[in-house]
Every structure is written in structure tokens, then in C-alpha cells.
Image (cartoon, rainbow, N blue to C red; front, side):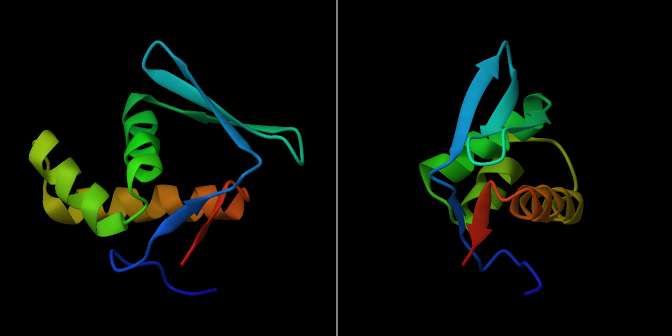
Length: 93
């Protein structure tokens, strides 16, 4: 598997259905019937990825919005994208 970096983009699967539940979210993979839960930050990241797909753009937005070390934001973003990819909710390009 390719090592994910901020230079990649995330393309959301056509089988992934997102629902916001008061700030938290659930994603349903229509193909497998599997649910994937996201906390408020994860739901926000998903929405950033829907908007653009570029991990660098999502990272830049997160850096502006959250008072956290950039290295922590990068690590958490890449970890979430990795988990979403493993769950077949999208693909890294």
C-alpha cells in the first residue's frame, strides 16, 4: 500500500452515504452494509474531503481552525484517511 501523504487526494466512494447526527456522523457503505462512525472532528474532516479531496487543502483548513500542533493534525488526518481507505469508503490517489 502507498504511504499516504499530504500530497495525495481522497476520492470518496460512490457507495458511501454520509449522515450528520448533531455534529457527529455515520457513513454507510452501501456495498457492504458496514457503518463507520465519526466524532465531530472526523465529521468535519469528511466534509473537507467531500469539498475538495486534496489532503493538503484539508490540512491547511484544519491548521487555521484548530489550536493544535501541525504535526498532530497531519498525523490524525492521515490516520483517518487511512482508516477510511481500509473501510473502502474512498481511495487515495
